[in-house]
Image 1 (tube, rainbow, N blue to C red):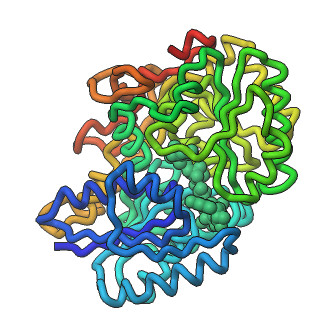
Image 2 (image 1 turned 60 degrees about the vertical axis):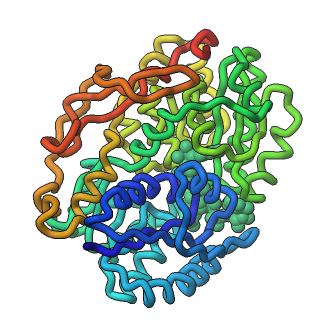
Length: 439
Ligand code: UD1
Ligand code: UDP
C-alpha cells in the first residue's frame, strides 16, 4: 500500500490533477490517497473541485487579493509543513509549474517523502518567460523522484537536464484525460448569458489571457487586437472569460467593456468552458492548458506569448506563436477568418498531448512493487510523428451539445502495449470555417 498526498492550488493544477486523484482512488488496494489544496486560487479552484466532485482533506485557503509570489510561497510552505509531518506520505504528487507545485516539491524534500512530478519536463529555456513558471519547473525537476513528462519532447528535456531514464515515465498529459471526461458529460446551459453565447450563429473568437509577463502594455495590445478584429469582421463575436486577477481585469476593462460584440464573462466552470472551446472558430490565448486542449478539439490557436513550452501544437500546425503585437495578432487572425484554406490547414483535429490514459500510467508507475510495471518498464519509447488523419475508433465522448465520437490517432508517441496508446481528439467538435460550423 502506498500513501499518496496529492497537492494542488490553482485552476489548471486542479484540472490536471483531478484525473490522477480519481484514478488513484479507484485503486484502494494499492493506494491511500489524501488531497491537500493550498487555495492559491479560491473561486477558480472551487469550480474545478465541484466539477470532479473532489473534497480536499486539507485546505490551506491561502489566497489573498493581489498576493505576491513570496506570499504564496511562504504561506503554502508553512501550511504544507505540518500536513507532511502528520501524514508522512510515501509520495507527494503535484503537476506543472505553479508556485503551489514547486512548494509541494520542496515540502516533500524537507520531509524526505518521494515527489512525483506530473507534467514534467516542459521548458522554454528562458528563466523569465514564463515568469515564474520556468524557474518553478527547473526547481521542481531538481526536487522530484519520478517524472511524468507528457510528451517525448518533454522527456528529452528531462534527459538533457540529467534525469536518469529509470526516473522518467512518458504518460501523455492528464489534461486530455480531463478533457475527455468532461466532454462526455451532458450539459445544458442554465445561465442565460452562456445560452445566448452558445446559440449565437456568428463566428466566435474565444480569448483568454492572464500571464504575468503579459501584464500591462502587452495585455493592452491584446485587448486592442480583439477590438480591431471584431470591428473588421462584423460576423464575429469575441468571448472573453476573464481571469479573476484584478490586474488582468483592469487592463482589459477600459478597452473591451461595453463593445456590443465583445462578451466579458466570468471564468467558466470546466464543462461549459470546453463547450465554448468546441464552439469557437478561433482561439486567442496565453494559457498553457488551452493550448493543449485546442488540438484535440481541432481549433486553431494563436498563442499570445513570445515563447511556448508546448512546441508540439505548433509542430502539428494547430498553434501559431504570435506574441502580443497588435498588428501581428490581427493579421494572423484575419488570415484565418478570411482564408478557408489557411483555416483548414490550422484546424485539423490531432492530439500531440495525450490519449486520455495519462492518469492510469501514473498510477501504474506508483503502484506497490508486484502490482504494476516498474518505472523503467514504462519508460518512453520515442514514437513516430502523428499520422495526419484522425480515425474515429470508438464512441464515447460528447462535444458541443450533441453526441460525438472520440477519435484516436495512430501511430502514437505514447507507450504502446498497455491500452490504446494513441492520441485522442474530439472530431465532433472539429472546427469549420464559417458560421454554419456552430450548430
Ligand atoms: C497562477 C499561476 C500560473 C497559472 C495561473 C492559472 C503561479 C505563480 N502562477 O497565476 O502559473 O498559469 O495561476 O490561472 O503559480 N484570484 C481570485 N480568485 C481566484 C483566483 C485568483 O480572486 O480564484 C485573483 C486574486 O486577486 C489573486 C490573483 O488573482 O491574488 C492572482 O492569483 P495567483 O495565483 O497569484 O496568480 P495567477 O496569475 O492566477
Ligand atoms: N478554463 C476553465 N474556465 C475558464 C477558462 C479556462 O475551466 O473560464 C480551463 C481551460 O480549459 C484549461 C485551464 O482552465 O484546462 C487553463 O487554466 P489557465 O489558463 O488559468 O492556466 P494555465 O493553463 O495557463 O496555467
